[in-house]
Every structure is written in C-alpha cells, then in structure tokens.
Length: 95
Image (cartoon, helix red, strand yellow):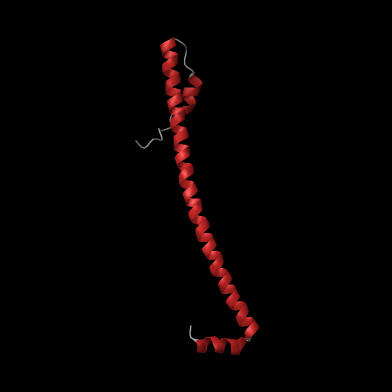
C-alpha cells in the first residue's frame, strides 16, 4: 500500500476511522501471532501426553503378565477378570 492510497483513505473516511481500521489490523496480527504460539505449545503437550499414555498401557500389560506368571508359579488361580478387562488391547510399545 502506497502513501498516496493511505492519504486518500484518510481523506475519504477521516483520520479517526482510518486509525481505528489500522488499530484493528494491528490487533488481528497480534492475536494471530499469540494463537500460533499457543497452538505450537498445545501440539507439543499432546505429543508428550500420547507418549505417557502409551507408557501407562505398556505398564498395565506388563503388570498383568507378571501377575499371571507369578500366580502360575505359586499355583494360585490367576485373576481372570483383570486379564479379561485388558484382553483385546494392543501393546503400545514401539520397540
């Protein structure tokens, strides 16, 4: 935008209205910048939370497996309800 266009806008609508439009554009860019940084932070937190969720699922599977092995080794009846609740869930480890 050239200076001639800016002065023509001020001449057509008046200085207060042109100033308000300029302030609105400034506020738009500031809010856009702030929201971009917030979205980046949220995406980073989402990745961390997904990793933690995978670790919890893995620990749950490992605990159930250890419980079944210990119950078998000691000759005890394994907790079938607990094993059934975890049935059908895939191991969340990536290794």
